[in-house]
Image (cartoon, rainbow, N blue to C red; front, top):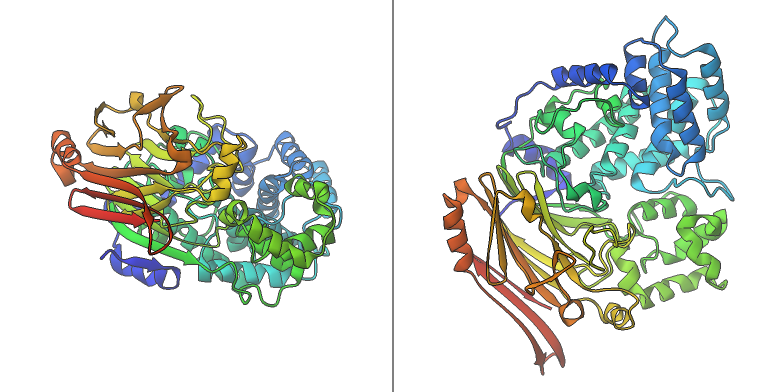
Amino acid sequence: MKPVYLLTIWCSLLTTLSVGQDVNFGTEDRKSLLRQVSLENPNSDASPIFAYEGLSVKDTWLQSLLTSTLTKETGDFSLVKLVRTLYFAQSHSQQVISAQMEDRLLQQLADLHYWQEYDEGLYCYWSENHLIMWMSSAYLMRQLKGWQMDPALDDRLHHYLDLKIKYGFYEFFSTTYLPYTLSGLLNLVDFAEDEAIRMKAEKAASILMKTWLMVVNDQGSFFPAAGRNYLSKYKGTSYHPLTYALTGLGRQPTGPSHITGFLATTSMSLEEAASTWRNELDVSYSFGHSMSDSSIHKGLNRQDRTFFQWSAGGYFHPSVANDTTYTVDFYNLEKSKHFSVFKNIPNFPDSWANGFAKIGASFSRGSAISEATIDIFKNQGVVLTSIDNYYGGYAGYQQRPWAATVDDISVWTQAGEISSQWNKYSSLMQNTHLPSITQKGHVALITYNPNKEIKVADGIKQIDTDVALHWPAERFDETTSHGLWVIGRKGSSYIAVLRDADTVKDGILYSGADRGRQMWAVVVGNEKMHQSFSRFQEVVKAATYKEEYIWSFYEWNFVYKTNIDIDGVTISKRW
């Protein structure tokens, strides 16, 4: 039985199980290199690095960051860089920021709303990454300039850090958002004068980086099953500055990026996190808490509690919908694009919201990312990750339920409208229905069976329940097929995917069968595991699989049964 990593015993397990294997420990050297390439090819992302080195920071860079802070929904992405630059600037005797620009920055930042106020509709304060960037910036600017901030700031900040240390990160394995979360944490690590805050931030940052490395293969590729991510992070290669800073794997950055300005200048040692990377892994990583656990956010006022629930995807989840309607009304957020749906809904008591959410649970429950178990198999260049039995049949949002890595190629399935460029999927609802996945080591059974409400929506052409396979054949060194199996090799890494049907649309392998009720499977391997690609193909050809949709008199209902037996692994699903 493979080990299960629970967050509460995470640090001790890593110390025991992962004495650094095949990693060149040179994190301080890599920090220096990141600073060097950023100084040689600078842009506004390099502002903290210039300030760190005591070099003059261009007014145009700072003005660009300030404009973004004041005018963009994601203004905090720029704000954390300004805060870091200001702190480094004041640590030097020489002038790093021009007096005129510093006055402008401080004047504008002093008037900024660092927390949600009534009728504030520009910013998003409540997702996991935004929470820490806004709170850390408010905390540090109060510390630096004595500015008045929301009186509940300290309580919220401690609650956030304690939550991450105890339960982990909701936006798990997010290529998109975890680097932003890390930037907020590193600002606290480097500048917070309160040692309790600083130590908590460092511990949370360490957990984030260690979990990140679980999915990185020996090429430095990072294609994970994830709580919140975007399709663009999977279509090409995925070499990340965070991976490079920690391990030296992947492509060396040639210039600055958002996270580079933090990693290259942090006082936090990256050695401990780097030492946990492993070339081989077969684990289940569990984190989080139930959305319905009312004790989690005890002590916060109702609005703040709601923001933390939203950070876990709990917008219209039946357990928290009452709080959502209350908070939207409290801050008049109907004007915000995030809650524009409320404009067209008649006023009704907050207490009714949970009931309405239960009625629409097929579309609301699947947004939750407060807890999950992620199965992770890694062997050199191949990685297979999946979210174990996670809201199968419900509408998916920004989750990526499974992904396989073959050297530097990503393979996955996705439910929704098919298009040749994969550009018809909504950035909000990236899967019209989620599969139920069971993974055992290097094999996963992926079963789709959308809830009846979703099937009805498909029947009236409101959504599409087709399932497509991302299979970039042109990027493999070799591909072949056997029946419903497609098989590929990149270098010495192998993959085979069992499709539900042998059909193609707009150049995409897909199945439109049975209004989304479908069976898929995936197996990965490599030269070490299977000796050769021809041997791997023989393993695939010897596989047996079966699906049945039958009437059960005992349950007085139809039952969907799937089964696969391959390479010594047997997986069955009854739905």
